[in-house]
Image 1 (tube, helix red, strand yellow):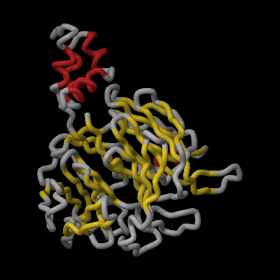
Image 2: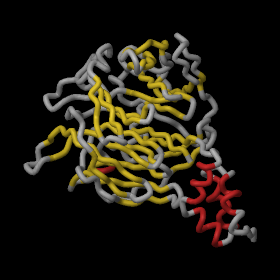
Image 3: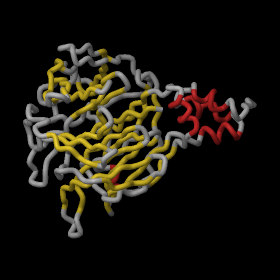
Image 4: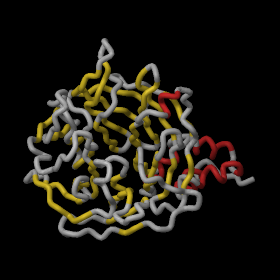
Length: 353
């Protein structure tokens, strides 16, 4: 049996990919197994800058989540979520990755529930519940903290209410904390972290009117700044249009303008979006729903149906440059054996581990 000293285990494990540890775990001593199930391994990987992006996809009502490496050459299926509620598997779900946890929020018959997948344990856990259970919120994560802004909650009479409340989740403590609410109540918005602040863009208000304003949250002052007309140039072609598709790479905010299949970049100083060419997927096919648009380290990732007549699912990435009018998108053609993506992506997030 392979034996490692206590001081060797983190160094060896830090150089392994996220799928390799479980393959060799049967050969390792108890101390190493304890390290594998703790967050120490992932802390060392963070310190040594050995973390890699992994794309987590959910592509069907009852199918499992699947985790791919950034090149889509290897993948693994996560265990099935331990819910016995039919409603949960057949209703919409929202996901965000925070630290080495995957947070999945959906609806069971009795109300909104939270499940979390812990990478170090390769296991799902239920809870803890949000302070204000809601759906259709704007969210984003920054390291081991994730923010959830606005959304729809049910009031005491069982009626849906659009809220402006915001709470954050800490992956280390597994606790929710309320913070100051936004200026606007909004649903179907999108969130991101940009230059140290949490941004919420677009969405619809309590009168179902599309919002063109954005807001930024400064955690040091626990305050929000309203940004008028942040999305004034964006096209709304349908009431059922998806939330904005946004991603941050190298402190630049990018958006996929779904109605025109265009990539745009935001100038934070002038409050103007610049066009960066066409994306290689048909983002307008279902009013923006069913595609994925994410930041993946120094790259942008887009998954959706191709522009060709046979409408196959394609995966492209690029290293975006705000100074180039047309981006160079590279198609990922060599899929891992056993993986097949449908034409409609339900959930997508990127985990760094």
